[in-house]
Each structure stands twice: as structure tokens, then as C-alpha cells.
Image (cartoon, rainbow, N blue to C red):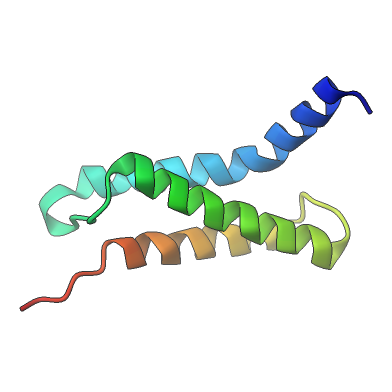
Length: 92
């Protein structure tokens, strides 16, 4: 496999995590005053994407192949939990 093929496979592997991370950060911006995360939307996207890629790698190692719906469901739940923790604030 050449470099271009490798990069194509890698980007296609990471794309679902990036899409979910970006959508969650945009939704957090859209909710505005009710939900105000401490981080900028760029940092939220990065954190959610990192969590999503980690779940995708664990799913790849567990199932032996990528693209399983169980892995995608786990990725969505993990990214949602990450986004919830990013917006968690103590009310004083």
C-alpha cells in the first residue's frame, strides 16, 4: 500500500469521529445560554474527535475490522458523554 492509499484509508477511518465531534460542538454553540461550555468550539471538536478515534481504534481491535455498527454506536455515546463533561459546571 502506497502513502496516498494509506492516507486515504486513515482519513476515511477518522472521518466519522470528526463529523460527530464537529456536530456536537456546533450544537453546543447553538444551545447558547442554557449550555455554555468552558472551551471554544474548536477545542470541543478536538476533544470529541480524539475520544471518537479512541473508541474506533478499540472497536477495530475488539472486532478485528472497522465499520461495525456497534462501534459507531459506542463512538456516538462516548462523544456525547465527552461533550456533556465539557459543559459541566458547578452552580454556586
